[in-house]
Length: 552
RNA sequence: GCGCUCGUAGCUCAGCUGGAUAGAGCAACGGACUUCUAAUCCGUAGGUCGCAGGUUCGAAUCCUGCCGGGCGUACCA
Image (tube, rainbow, N blue to C red; front, side, top):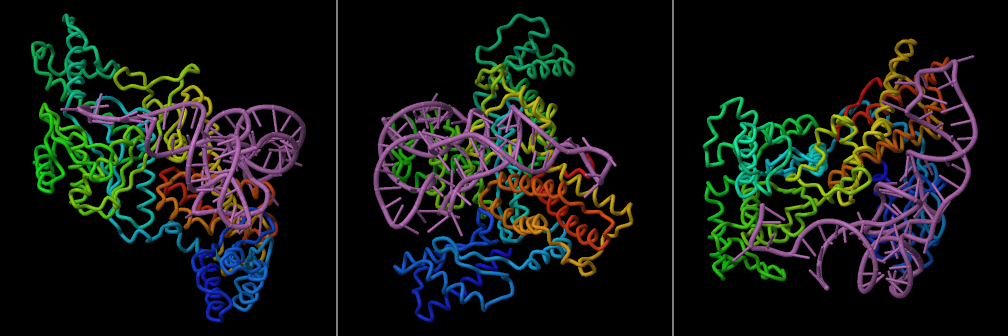
């Protein structure tokens, strides 16, 4: 907030220098205003001297001096502006500017941090998209939480967000699922049979088979067609998946079934359109898509010689449907195993006349599981995975969300269930939540002691003067920018790190200074700060889907 | 082989659209509870930012090469 004001004042000075002929306008937009890393370098700092000196071939400090001279006349925002180091301009902001943040935050309340930068752009976030072959595992959990927090951030910044889950309940995987279910069904009935070699081995299949017996007895034992088994499995698994997601606070606006692309003729239509445009040809009895026309190394098969489409074709058709539904921005959250499909889909989208620049793919790295110190290759089929439900049981929703949001998407994560269980108490989510609980506690105590929460105009705000207090205000002032950046960069971890930092500053302050004392005016002033801070922490937790307990 | 991606403290990770002295948590060590919640705080220690070049006033950050991990590289999804 304040940074932008400083930047715009600096821009004015720069332009003034241009019109006076001191320097050219080449440097326009090249210099920055940033938060310095070290103490004593001001509240903000600009590299303008160094940048302009490079362009004009002049001494950076001299240029910085000229800027400072112009700035001095400009505004009461600054307490001091000085040249430092090799040619930086450091800005020291008047303390009162920081204090004025308090009434702003209090007035905006839950809206502080929200913004309209999204301009109501329609965004679809596609995530999870797991086929119903088993419970959600850790990897899905990461994706679910990543996608959901991105969606939340976009909503907070004025985007119109639509969450979609894309799934496929046809094909080989599902046939195997049906066969596995039938095999277990017969097993439970004591019938002789063989479990499919590549069948799904999890306990959940047995449970599903049992449910069939409960409902229908042995009426299905002579069914050769696996459809009924498949459908039962799908129904149960999907119910579990939605329950798991809901438990984590994740709700979808739509589940999109890949099969509808066939039923509604979109698959055939896409092939026709591509053929009309000359991007498709036949060879070796298969249908090929000329991805080489889009700079790829080789063409790709979209319909196998058996007549079945490869996964690329429905993926392309699906993306066309997304475009046709008039979204301005399409965000796909994929695991890194989908890297290879992305360029093909993009080529397809482009070939059909849509703009691939409207698609952003967030790829997240895998979560590897270690058990007894050894890495386990997770597989739904072999059922050697850890489910999201198990994790939630053990660590709770908040800790799990925090854990997954802490890391940026493209970092690999190692997950050790034993360690997670043991360490869940150390999860930094509690550090932030405890901060919130403490803030609430102060407000409660104040009420009990009869120290009233007065409006900002009625307190002596100059009493808010400790460096820790001003630093808290400075940190609070960046909150809207943090949210905005995290949203536009699709990087929820930035909010997490911000909250940890802010909570840390508060905990320090709490241990050093007392808010409620016999000094009533001072207590009242500090209480205003505490109230505003509580709002920021609460909003931060809310925005990324975490609870903000008032007591712990 | 090729493509994408990662490599920062003992461990887990921030920082990466170039800026001044590279940060946090955990683990280690030493301190602070008759005081608004000690799920907290304060301090100490810990680094060739994978390696080597290059670009420039300035590189953890950009470029090139190499080394090492992950994921791909199907008429599997």
